[in-house]
Image (cartoon, rainbow, N blue to C red; front, side, top):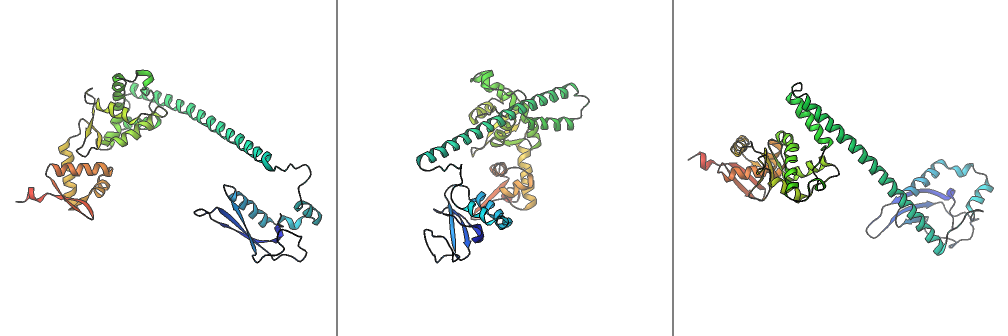
Length: 328
């Protein structure tokens, strides 16, 4: 079966639906009187639909649109046009039946193998580059230590944040320290080193989810499991490191600086709520620049200490200054 390109008026795409495949609708001119015999001599429809079960409709539509725009068949000799549109050309192998299916499956397998090989080559190159960047960060860190007096505190903090984004130079792994307490102790010490600056920038407190994402991004290929992170964080206070793990009444876990004072945190929350009259946890989070989760925990802590009271309605949870405590 063949349709001359000169018989096509225009083409359009028909998107796939539930249980329906994508189609290309080809609108045709009326059949000429000298039409060759085919499956049907005439039809009430002036179009045909090409259905695509898997893929290929986008590329087919693009190429057919190019041919319709260029109209190259108008510049071809009649004899060549007829020869092109009739029957298989000499030397062309037509794959039919089981042999054709097997050949297509083999070609698809080879293409898949090629794509997988290229993907692993790119991954190997990425790992080589990652090692180079880690070595560079280690070199810069050593230079900062050597020139501690010549570099200001702000520049040091900025450099360390850059190094954290580049990756940890020597991540603690199970291969190095085993899988017991020693591993978690060394991991806790490394966490204290890399989280100090980010915590100071975030007001002295971070949720364990944020810590997990930050640390694993810095570790590159040596990813930590949530269980290892929690076990290492539980040792922070016992090792007298400048950080500690805290679990709120709701079960939310956070990492905070040892210098982080609860009274100051509550006083700040009370002052912000008093200025605005009332706040939801989402509004409070936007004002102070922290996650909604931590904002809600801070407001709940202020409520627990008697500084705030709540209005829990269909509109959500809203906190107000506790006038019962301040006005008698």
